[in-house]
Amino acid sequence: MREVAILGVGMHPFGAYYSGKTNAEMSLVAGLAALDDAGLTFADVNAAYMGHIFAQVMSGTRILKEFGLTGIPVQRIENASATGSAALREAYLSVSAGHYDVAMVLGFDKMTSMIQSGTAGTAPENLEDAILPAAFFAMWATRRMHERGTKPEHLARIAAKNFNNGALNPMAQRQAKERITAEKVLSSGMVAWPLTKMMSCPIGDGAACAIVGTVEMAKKLRPGRPVVKIAASTLQSERYERGHIFQGPVVGPARMSIDSSNAVYEQAGVGPRDLDLLQVHDAFAIEELEYYELVGLCRPGEAEKHIEEGAFEIGGSLCAVSTDGGLIARGHPGGPTGLAQIWETTLQLRGEADRRQVRRKSGDLPRLGMCHMMGGGSVCVIHILQRV
Amino acid sequence: MPETPRPRQPIKPGFFTVPDDPAQPPKLLGTRCEDCGEFFYPRRALCGKCMSRRTVEVELDARGTLYSYTFVHLPLFGSTNMEHADGYGVGQIDLPEGPRVQAPLAGKQPEFQVGQTVQGELDVLRDDGGTDIMIIRFRPLGEARP
Ligand SMILES: [Zn+2]
Image: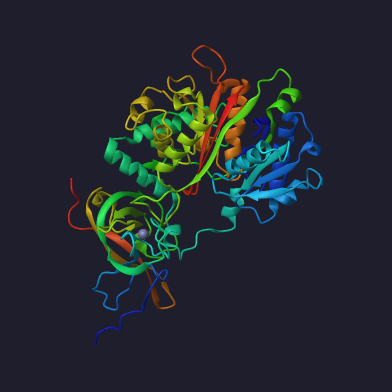
């Protein structure tokens, strides 16, 4: 098994364009940025993994032709929100096993065109499709409020943090003009009680890319730049336990995040307290609150106290979470979302995150970052990136 | 002369019954594993716990305990029922046999309470050429508990 590094990352800003750029145009921007960042050209790429949810079949293969026709293998990977993360894992596995030296992972989607083409994907004959995704997550929040005394203010503080982080990220879809307060989040209009609009991620478009290769190659291509390696990777589906909900597979069992994070910690030989930053699937603010505990940043029932202390903010006492704005502010077009997390974590570990740069208490650059994604409530994909 | 009852059809067959007598409550259509005894909703071919192929179809009483709920502030998708226009409740209901069911709730938000007993009832989603398309909704039984 070879050690695998992120050689380069690139993004097209996420946003709600509706009629603007095509998937191919956004993908070229993200892909060429990642190649430039790696110090490579498309001729150096040995294999490509394309992540898209809403685009037509073969879209990934067709879009890759815009880069060049070099005969390399191209595969589509799809796993709902975790599409980009799952594609990265395939690239990691293939480079690690020695099949390829350089693999390109490209995620793209135009969620807005999906919405424009009507309510595609919501078939009324499926009762669960008639229920808004927000409702499933809202029920997670209601149960938490019942069991732990969580208040809507705690959810609002998470969303406000993510909006304020997103304002420091030029790739983020929601760019707040002023500092966002919990009060503003609470008054932003109810979607599914207790979740408000600003506690929910927006619909959008975008593309993101990562170039994966060996650690030796990373050192040669960009001498002097910190090398970011993939220290651990896991993809898990659900295990049955009583109380499992078989309809509306959106939230998924909490157990999946516990098991998956334990697996990557063991692989990487680290624990949750070693993490300097964490990106999670915060499509709704309640998710981020739950994941603080499920991935072990704090003990069950303690998230609220730490939220009140600002422990998950950039510069906070426990771990900086959703530093790029998360799904709530950076946006969540689908295919590229998991790769946007990799973009952010790579920049952070290299010290290139500009005004949102995370630093350790010593003032040093962060060393370990984790990227957690849920896909359709049915898979959990986690990667740990490490500066070496 | 009594009015002829309008024909009623479930939104999707195989999930719940629509009794001929409108006064009768619907039943949920589930599965029981003959090897490990686990119950499932909705129906499935293999046991989700032990993977046994020895499964049987069962009817379950649409009555249970509200595990969690929300109230969605948007019209119910695909519905022309005016009662759904200003939002709708959604709940997770634990049946006594074990399955947790996710379904719309009948009633307004202040009527829901975690832990209360809820009863499934049929509700018209829309009129489809003279046939009523039915969904199942769960209604709080009695007053919400404090
Ligand atoms: Zn069984």
